[in-house]
Amino acid sequence: MSRRRTVLAAALSLLPLGQPLLLGSTTALATGAVLLANQTAFAQSAAVFLKRGYAKFQRDDYEGAITDLDKALEINPQSYIAYTLRGAIKSQLKDYDGAILDYTKAIEINPNDSDIYYFRGQAKIENSELSNQISTPLSDAKNPLIRIRKSAIKDYSIAIRLEPEEAKYYDKRAFAKFLIGDYQGALNDFNHALLFNSSDYTLYRKIGITKNVSGDKEGACKDFKQAIDGGDNLAIQLYNENCQDKISESGNQEFNNRALSMIAWAKGVENEKSGKDQQAISDFTRAIELDPNNKYAYNSRALTRRKSGDIKGAIEDYTKGLEIDPGDPLIYRNRGINKARLEDYTGAISDYNMVIEITPDDSYAYYLRASLKSDLGDYKGAIADYTKAIQIDPQDAAAYTNLGNAKLELNDYQGAIADYTKAIEINPQDAIAYSNRGIAKYSLNRFQGICVDCCSDWKKALSLGNETTERMFADPKLDLGWCRNMR
Image (cartoon, rainbow, N blue to C red):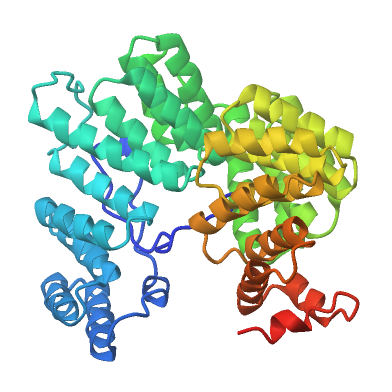
């Protein structure tokens, strides 16, 4: 649901941390095309070394890759991507100190990429010399491992501030908190990860482990069972070791049906990703037949139905999902979005209200509710919700732009100009903010002659390809030729 993405969008990933029962499998490195697409400011020769270094990295020639990246950085010392890639390679070589230094340099060059903070946090956790077995977490504040893990938590926190809807950031921060004995903080973060990735059933296993270590055996068993229901076979061992009744991997028909249901669901997800929407819907339907309580299948079928134009069918599936899990805020949010598409604004606002009741720190729910209120002419209500969204996420440029729009509708031109200016500070490419700030300035100064500042904003919006501004300049009734000819 995020409306902002980092410049280096998930271009790299690191080795898994620690015990596999807690952390799951390794994430593969993404393709070089994504990594290299955004680096435009270096010399051609630096680009050659960067690409060659990445190619060697893909062939596991780590030393050769580092040599080429060193040369790329000699030519262009401002290539934060080269530093990030070299840091990832050093992490593979277990040179975590070197990796941390490279990530730190990348952050100095580009402090707004959440993934680099995430990678540095990962390197710090690796550097704390984790055992490959789940051990008693450390809680002695004087222990140097505690200090580096707390430093990693700070990195994850910055990543979350920059990209507050990325589940993996909460997941890894939770693990770091687990390692220093902050179980409640870990549980909070694991649950936040679930909020943004409700289909990751391995998170239930991690929550169960955390509850088990902190003494909540009953809660742990429930979460292990939830992970098993989602198809996480690793959780079976934990359930059998810690809970009274035992689960057979093959002797329980109900369990088998749930497992087969998850297999059908996973197949549907792959078909949906491949653009085979009708086959995906059939897979999700089969998953539901095997396990009528598989909320993931209902949610995925709803998303696919919506893509196919069956909005009513999507709403029906979301409603069924809420019957299974009435406390899932993401289902309420998605159902609200689809109700709004059918112009059921009252129903949509009711769903957004539920999201906010369940997760009062969900800035996007306030944003969505504000947008509907604005469409309905309730500008004061929209202003209140956009303001709340900004309090939760002060870097949300879209919320500032829309807050300015609501104020503009109420003729609060000064307030609108201030909000558009803040949006532009956060996102200098926000063409709508420039265009509407020009309108607000024009409205404020329309009786004072030619508005030079308005013209400057409109020309900037034009340069960014804003179609509304182009239509304004093409409209003879507005007579904006004076602005087009102004230098």
